[in-house]
Picture 1 (tube, rainbow, N blue to C red):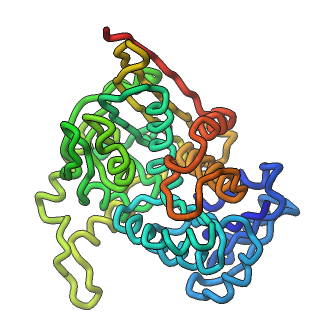
Picture 2: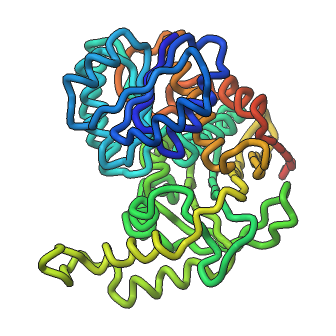
Amino acid sequence: MKIAVIGAGAAGTAITNLLINEPSVKSIIVIDKNGHQLDELEERAESPKLRVHRVSMDKELSILSLIKGYNCVISALPYTQNYKMAALTVKAGINYVDLGGDDKTLQEQFTLNEAARERNIYVVPGAGFAPGLVNILGMYAFESFDEVTSMHMYAAALPMKPKPPLNFHLSFSPVGLVNEYLNKVSVIENGELKQKNALDGYERFTFESRPELEELEAFYTSGIALMLAQHLKGKVDEFSFKSLRYPGHRDIIKAFFELGFDSEQIIDIQSSLTYKDLLIRQLSKFLPHSTEDTVLANVTITGKIGDKTVRKNYELNLAHNALRETSAMMACTAMSAVKTALFAGQAKTDTIGGAYVPELLVDNKAYIDFMCKHGMELNVTENTLR
């Protein structure tokens, strides 16, 4: 199997390192415009499987030439470039996977469904951590029930040594982070699909398998579960996704927005800088880029198994490991993207080609088994309600 990785940043590097150790993957190319990152990746990998190519993302003909004959392309680019890359791989007739994180981009990518179906290939956006692993864990839990009443998902990548006042770090793009706090969120209430404001739905949450983290806060964020919410409409009474943070984080973010730092109003005509741009710039400058983190995902689900009403609690977590040479977030993202790409590239499925979110395409049990094999811990508790 041959896989191309577009982007040699933190995520692209973690993905490449994992692919190198996959026996079924015989050839890997990594494409990026940053020659220094490519040289560093190639030097540290020291693998005969790997080739790197310095190419700008606007050189479409060059990229098409390089990925010809490959089974799957994994985009580790910023989400703003994912539609363009997905369209390019459809043109080439090659399966495509990315890390997602933006609902508008996701909807644009789904306009490629018919073209992908005609080529009998898969376009699979949102195959990172959240979206990605969290959604698949949700469907894995859903499939263990005969009938589901409610499903609520929670997730985060938290720093192990939080720095006040925000007690958070940048494990992905600050642009994506701010959009998660601003864009509308899809939930299901009383069986109906509804739109909520990000940062609403506040509650306190304790992660049972990691009691040392104590009480966290949870609230709605966007970019994670749009398609899953649409899929579950009519199948559950209640559904939601919330991000986890250390207490106090949400109120500070809300205060920024109340002061106008969510505004697209231009404050510097020469640079076209907006208040929102300024917030993103300052978060990028002052939030730490820690690799000492922990990844958490929880699905709390209630429904019928046989004639019993049951509540099950699924918790996945991956703690920082100094020997891993990357953050838990990047390791988890890489595992998720690689397993999805292996599934899409091997095409061992009766599902016809087209655009899919990973939780509605991959073998969810095989995916979870893969994650656990690579170090994630899964804890499942069950209580019979009646």
